[in-house]
Image (cartoon, rainbow, N blue to C red; front, side, top):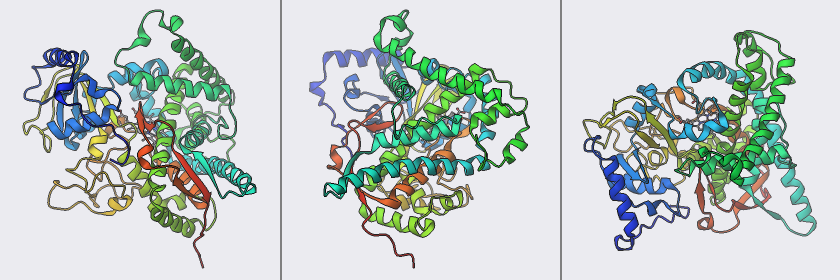
Amino acid sequence: RCVKTGSDRKPENERTLLDNASNLLTNLLSGGNMGTMPIAEGAVSDLFGRPLFFALYDWFMQHGPVYKLAFGPKAFVVVSDPVVARHILRENAFAYDKGVLADILEPIMGKGLIPADLETWKVRRRAIVPGFHAAYLEAMVQVFDNCAERTVEKFEKLLDSAQQEGKSEIEMEMESEYSNLALDIIGLSVFNYDFGSVTRESPVIAAVYGTLSEAEHRSTFYIPYWKFPLSRWLVPRQRKFHEDLKVINDCLDDLIKRAQATRQETDVEALQQRDLTTAQDSSLLRFLVDMRGEDATNKQLRDDLMTMLIAGHETTAAVLTWATYYLAQNPDMIAKAQAEIDSVLRGRRPTLEDVKKLQYVKLIVAESLRLFPQPPLLIRRSLKPDTLPGGHKGDPNGYSIPKGVDLFISVYNLHRSPYFWDEPEKFNPERFLKAKPSDGIEKWAGFDPTRGQGALYPNEVMADFAFLPFGGGPRKCVGDQFALMESTVALAMLLQKFDVKLRGSPDEVELVTGATIHTKNGLWCKLSRRKSITNLN
Ligand code: HEM
């Protein structure tokens, strides 16, 4: 792998007695009712010191695409097969809910779309999806441009200062820069609030980062310590979390009140036809408040906004980070992207029409999502008994799943599966241009050109669920096109002006994971002004 995985397994004789006892106990507790499903024999210690999804990949190679993993007091079924993933996410989607994920996120997102119970989810999904209409996305490209321009200006100023000291490059920690950029974009586009985090610090920004870090901490913890009585008052990190939450909630409540004070009730079609490119407030909040028949409580609106703030911030920042990680090692790819950017943009800022034409940059975004899917695992819990389909390499008859089983769909495994991708570890944006061979699915390295026509980016339908960057079925991401365009615009505007290379070796970039995959110590890069601008004449 290109980044340090620490994936060396401990030799058998080094495993502790405790590990073995724990394995025995958990396998006994979880065994029995899932037929012949293989059981991963990993020790609990395999999970320490490296992200969980690396271990899940090793076990996928050993045990096949559907196996049971038992650790601690819990057992999980791990799925790495597109046919089985499609069944759980699309064909029998309502037989599953978000399980552990909802437990973790509910205290932060309340009844927002991600953790919401089915009844609430149906109502809110129906209200929110129309908000991401074509005119909204078109107007958002301007927001992406404005925010990316702030980052460009910041780098240009720093390069000017460096130049005065005789230097031609600056060292930047790009992960934080992308995080600030994505926060500014999500604030303006979802609730018309300018965090201004590229250029300043504020208590609200600090609170957002505090809350995100707690959400991440919870997602890596198997005991719900935040549910312990009095923990809110006694545990300092819990106290801080509730303080942070209050700062954000107060800010969101205020924005909701202001939007309601200027409410102009209209039906959905009229809202979708408004000219948002000149509107003062083109945010999703404006849409949700103005929509006729929309009777969500303020608490529900706040939960929706909080969910989108969290779902749309770190994910996009991570895509940009990993795209840059690969580009910074591949000057030829940078040159190719820059030639495309110059010929499409001719020095301008991108419009929606330009985004459609930035074919190579879009493939870079898709390929980053393939190698580093955000989140790397989708989490589900069965609400009733189900029978999984016989997957491509799994049990031909399908495994039976009792009610209450926790499942991980490993998108990371699907996206790096040697069964479906040629050279799965290699960053190769153009792999998406290759059509799927007609002779079956044994090597599914390409896309079926007859499906998903008109899509701007490679998607799960074209790949028949072997590529799942935004999930699939009814719970698929509502912000997929938004996020893809945002990432394309940001990359295009940065590459239009700058060359980038890694400060050190790629192996020094260690990764950690919570909800998203990010670097342990930042993505340090060297940035310089572009040496050559493509001759357009
Ligand atoms: C759901 C990925 C950006 C809002 C999801 C899911 C994935 C995903 C994989 C499905 C989760 C599951 O099935 O358990 C991403 C990635 C993004 C991104 C990789 C950026 C590159 C955004 C943005 C927004 C957003 C920008 C909003 C502005 C949501 C919401 C859901 C969701 C509300 C829950 C949908 C539902 O359950 O109905 N996202 N997302 N996401 N995403 Fe995104």
